[in-house]
Image (tube, rainbow, N blue to C red):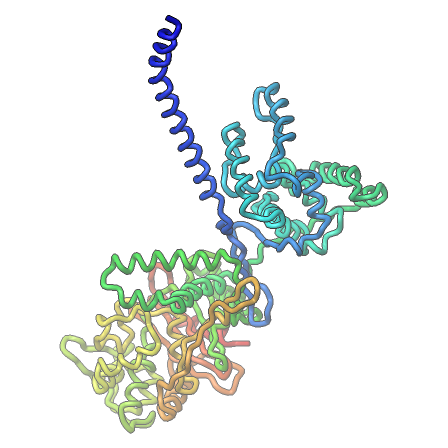
Length: 617
């Protein structure tokens, strides 16, 4: 009977055993899956952080920084021993012994927290804190704490203790968007960590425990008291002697908070735009965009380019530029003083004749970073300022013509287009020089007709005018009548070809380097001849004549040569001057952002004054 009962119980237990086996298998699979998830989550790759980008002028002086978070990562070897001891002794004395978590500390914290109806005491090791900073949320729950322990154990398998400590020292939050002790030193004391004394280092170490509570800019006294407690911890650990502790506690703390360097925002903005062009060119995106079959394909390429640009910008690169800070300051001061209170705006670009580098820009009156930058974003019809490039230089190139050749300036109609001269005047035969300097419209259209529209526009190709299209291939272009137009930067860039007949694109960026000083990007432009010596000499002579007797009378320069060409659009909505002296080539636009007449300013020769300001040293 007993055997029969035992057999029956065993038989009835089979489904239960089968169910238990299934549940164990499920739990085992889930545990392995969770383990694999943890192993896959913990990676040694660097976290996505933004390291400040720095811009330097031609003299090697910092003039602008680009960052949302202030970071200055340091190798562990460059972090002073005292700084490491402060955190090891106060946060995790057993750091070099445990496996990522401290069982005894967890038990103590658990006992306290059970009685406090919540997680009021932590038990996180430095490894766990790194895990929390990199991979987990800061919420205080037992589930998160359990994950933290698992992740910490895995991180210890994949990284050395020194690697983990380096992560910790560089990723701690010190308030005010400052991350890492190296950045904290340069932010709060304006000097490298290695130059801080023990009192200053301990003062910084007081902040991460609670960056809001111990914000030294708001709660200096609280931060100082915590600093003193940390120094007592080092005394008990025999890192410091009683005398050293007392000296450090009494040492005065003088903050010297870093001010974000943001000089010359108009030039800064232009450099960031050129950086995008440079990366696109060097990494093949420009060629891919040219070859793209449709807009959808272009969009995909542009998105990839944007990601790449963000990666470079956030990696802490150094950009060396051609900025002439003294020149930039003078241009901003002088042009702004002439525009003050008028409501009129201006954009300008100034280029060094010797180096062909962009040394100064004017973005607009009252310009602030991220504003509309009129030096390279204001696309306006150029008026007669285009004539030297599109009309007269191609004409001189097309035959044995000179500035003294005779040309008919009488009325002309090509189809329905019948240009008029300023004031409605009619002219007969004159020299090319006179027609050029007095800006006869009828002569310019006749000259363009002789050269041929396609032949003339071909001469603009090397200059890369971004907004000039096939639609602009009309005779109205001889007078600056483009569908969109060009920017001051583009016009000044093209006018550099009249320095000596050669051209290479004007650049602001000299090089882009990583944090170790390795050159990542630099332009490799080659200068090419675009005008013959005969044409260049004639154009320069006619530009000079325009200043001396023509429409640019009023332009002043202290150098031996100055030449310029003016441009005015219909109803005086845009006033232009483009030209050069012995040192600089420049283009200046003057107008309203919402076009309206500038007849009074034209009569007062304000645009000529602005151009003179641009080229003066």
